[in-house]
Length: 343
Length: 118
Length: 164
Image (cartoon, rainbow over all chains, first blue to last red):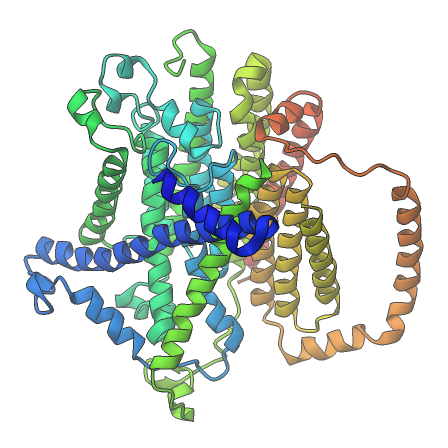
């Protein structure tokens, strides 16, 4: 593998000369790596939509899509092709530029944040020190795509993350994962009890529920409720403009699940320190955990009735913010004592 | 160290370009036959009752201000959380004073009913 | 990196000029976002990724969104455009333009002899150590300022709910 990379780098130098060769090579390599992350992500989004329809179908004693391909497995592809050939309608009176820019602005952060997500030990596109801050900065730009409800959830997520920072003392996502491999339980081989979800359990719940609100998912989907406001702004978007919005929202779901996995569920770490489990590559564990959280997203949608806007606000301001402040103070105090479990 | 960010900036560019490419694909493959009725904004089959850019409720504005204030607080909490082992009990106490002042404001808001949403 | 700095700085300047001269408030805000992002890039090229991230999160991601809310809330239409056009008449530029020119000359005179900033990254840990060490008093005073903001916001919201 390394030989292949070196050979390709050599070709680049040969073609573009010693001065331009290396930068061109870095550019091409980065571009390929970016596509290696984004294209499978698009595939995941496509099959997440199928999984959603199937799982919710079974939860409601239906069988979901089963006509296109075996057991409906080609349904997402049929959907994508259909959306591609649908007319793009830009309503008269809408600002054309902004109308087209909005879906792009929703998709971009959901993709670009993956640059700093570690897929395994040392397997990350950009191992930057302020990785977490970067993710927050890039996702905060997503509000321009959709300026709407569920917006206050951003703050509560931030508070929950401060607790994670307290115990890991790093903004680097790989360091945060590695920090969870240490601790009293990890020393006895029970890794999964040392992950942040247990000592920071309220924060994990706050983070995950805020994430559901942040991604405009049921039961907090007041901006897109299909029964009250016929899916909100989605009505005005057709064809590929709708598809890009949709892609952005589902990619965002996968992104927040990945972040929750890294912050609270030990990222790529195996749950128990056993030789057999350690032999399985970390990527598998990461995907498994993300998959579990995504299943929760779908499960919530099938289970809970939609919250009203005032109920979401009350939950955010009167439950989550006080809870996170209290937990923050407690964790910080806990760390000052000799019983600090995060040594 | 700053070079580490190059893939990040490139990812942002690729993210925008991919969105643009997808939209362009739709524009090329899909039919394009606009007519005034099709493009007119609608509300449940009627002509629009009022300008779609309707006035915003002042309460959204309040929520926005609160949101920014708490975001600012997080801006102080982040650097504090990453240096807590170095600054020890002094740093802990400093942040507790900071938080206490803000909790006063939060309690005030709560008691005044600014967090209610009737 | 120096090249990136100058490009970002030029974009910031151009975008800021557009913010001032645009008649439509929404367009002006969009340029403001561009300007803030460009400033974040400037901070980053100077070796302060933490400050750059905060610039994006707080200014571009939160405060401008508030401005957008205000513009939507006020629902400025053609009247506001006409008013803005009147306000931005060429002769109103003379006074502020001259005064700004004086400041610019002074700024150039002050900045001229200073050596360029040494490139080197400042980590979040360094920012934290500075904030909760040397500048602790500033942090505590900032919390008072935020308290004032909380109380102020509360009254802003209250008066309008009574009015309806």
